[in-house]
Length: 299
Image (cartoon, rainbow, N blue to C red; front, side, top):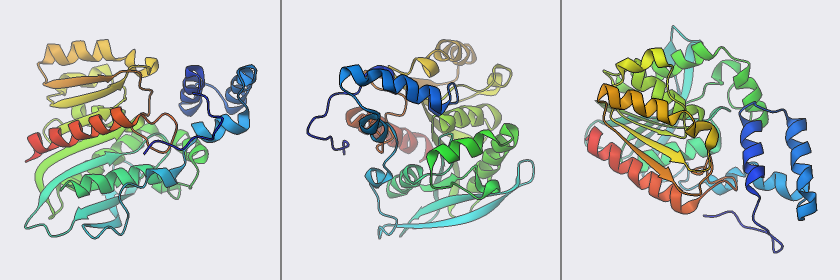
């Protein structure tokens, strides 16, 4: 599943991944990002070669087809009275269920419900869970088909209302006739933060949370966390990893069950198979662990 490389391919320098992470999370603007990339020309790189490698190619992320005969995907709205009034998500249900199945909320990165996250929802459903992936950008028309525009739209929104929308989505999923009273959540980047936030704000509802490279909930909320959590971190993701020691201290103090996996030589976003940050070995191991964790705690 690794991305194909041109014949003259050279490994992308780590600083390029670090700069992309800063750009993708609003720490530097596009002009600064491109200016930094241009300094790598002395090492034989060009912007024309680097940009396509760093930005998503969603054709590479389709591991499960939307018309796979074992699943039933559909878009549906849900009420969010404390958020934006109404939300919309991508629900994927396994076909042939004898009864309700556990629900798993799938939470996107900081750019809306893109094709990679929709594919993750289909993977969750193929594993036997009812998956629901909300789109935070629905109040503004939904994911625009472009990650840069998606990031800009999400930054323009009220963060507190977005969080309330995901709380409403989790409770909506838990209340469906097709789901049991067991609720899990998996999220990536911003979605990892949302999973940590849900663990703190819905401790009586969230039975298993798997945040991939996400920062923790605000300190004032953490005392409510019960777990269990499976924390997935990337060794080279210094920005997110800086928050882990304090979070670990709080989890230990609370006695909340958790497991932390640190994936060696992996970058932030290593599970996203649409970019060069994808680490196939780490991503597959992390996903196997995620599904095993859900089967253990949501059965």
